[in-house]
Amino acid sequence: MTSLNLNQSIDKNAAVPNIYLIPVPWDWRLIIQLILAIVGIIGNSTVIHVYLHTRTLTVNTTNRFIAALAVADIITSICIIPIPTLSYVPDNFGGHFYCKVVRSSVVLWTSIVASIFSLMVLAIERLVAIVPPMRYKRLFSVKVTRFIIAFIWIFAFAFNTFVIYANHLNSIEGACYVDFGGKRFQMFIGVSAFILEYLVPVTLMLVVNIRSIQILKMRALVFTTKTNRKSGNLAFLQARQRVIYMLLAVIISFIVCWSPDQFAFLAFNLGLVPFEYMYGNLYRAFVVLAFANSCINPVLYALTNKNFRQAIKQHLFCHSIRASEPVNGLFDTPLELSGSKTSTEGTHLSTINSV
Image (cartoon, rainbow, N blue to C red):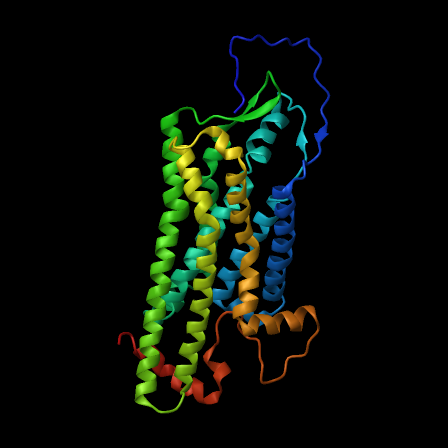
């Protein structure tokens, strides 16, 4: 952190230093960060492209949240692209804006929080879809879904306003610096960020997904014991179970990527590690690992979801999809996809609210 000498007077007649861009000091961290940014932009752009160019996908609530997650991840990927810095920050509106918005990376942290909460809401939406299913359309209508997505972004920005508050311009040295205004406030921010951005979402996502898997397994067991053949309802439950397993893989990747950074940042704000630690190789590696999460989700979709792979072939490689391979839902399989017999049996699915 740059120190500010309040007793030093400012010579207003002194010439303003030349302002120029300092080239990016490419090292292993920034090179990997650039690669992750490119992969994240390509992967999440593919998800958004497939979503926007398949009309039937836009009517599926799960796909809306997946697309919202991809938007947050693509913004994160764009924001982690290394950019040159200013050699001198002038003491004017532009200089203060540069420190509080550009150097603070407030857009980056806003998109990261939006990504975390989009993933959390997606897990909750999958549970509500099966318990109880009759309330699903009312709780996740188009208007409600849009409101939830908008609220996620509003909350993400509001929570990260402390980033704007803590970043300042040293008008004497012409440089940006960070000052929380006191150790207690910094500790409060550190603990609050750890709880709201990591502990609560991770705990909720794990509990919700494990519960969803348990319920679907119990319902599948009921269908297999009642009949010796695979009914349409059983196939439908198995499709939803695959979706939830995919989401569980996404959540586990989030935990693996973000846990080191979250615990390290918490330790820093609590004063357990020195300030220099934030610029050491270990913490820089934690940050790179965290950024990797923004580009890994599309890879997981492709590995775990056949419909997503088919949609990529259809839209990006002009691959013709056979009639037996419809792509009506990337991350869910409507009852109609299982055949006409499924649609008649599907009406009984909502009656099984508990096992």
